[in-house]
Image (cartoon, rainbow, N blue to C red; front, side, top):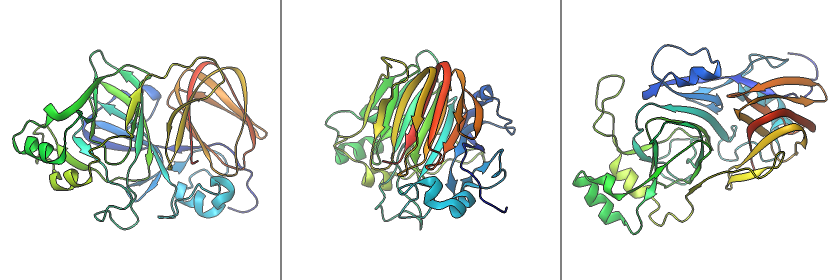
Length: 326
């Protein structure tokens, strides 16, 4: 690939992951999915367990790792490359849960059990769809300490210690590392997270995996990394009071996620500090910049280079999540 390439919105071919709790709901976004119970679409990421490749334009076929290596901070921003791993700092997923995920917890960046080059995992969820009665586990019930939780695990009554929340479309959850959590059956969510694939399972409903064997639990590691004060985990509703205004859903040292409802033309701008990720939750429209225009529809996810500059979103009742590194 020779010559100067002008920055443009990058879309990637998802990496699909079969999961025991997956199904086929992600087909609604027009994905060409492999056979099986697909639980996760990694729509943007650079990780040893899955790196997405660009679809379309001069960078067609380039992995996100190759994009980072070629364009560096010019496209990803001065804070858009992880200082710890040297990789793209975030991982964006769509998750289809036909059954409960394991009750789990993710470690912090400084956990000694992390593999070389692996980050901890702080994440957030935005509920794209939810069947009646769908629930999510987010944290422990008030006052539960490590000794009580360990005893509950030993007595097979862990679920009594967990905070269970009814969910509907538009709900959002901020799940910092150390928070016990689980997605429930019948939910479809967008997940923005640190670029990590480390999970400690505390409980798995007695299931077997896709190989027919019991799935591994990590009880000691889970009890060790849980944040028992739970002060920073949160969840809530996300009504947007006006069109073409960002509503902040989550903010951490790793990412900021905002929600907006596009009506008409919304003029926006990138920053040299970070790339921007646009994920369309509902509706249709397009993104325009000085070099062209690409259509947007539900499930579309684009990386806007930090050096893109001025751009506009156009649509009618199009719901978009925007994520970036602060």
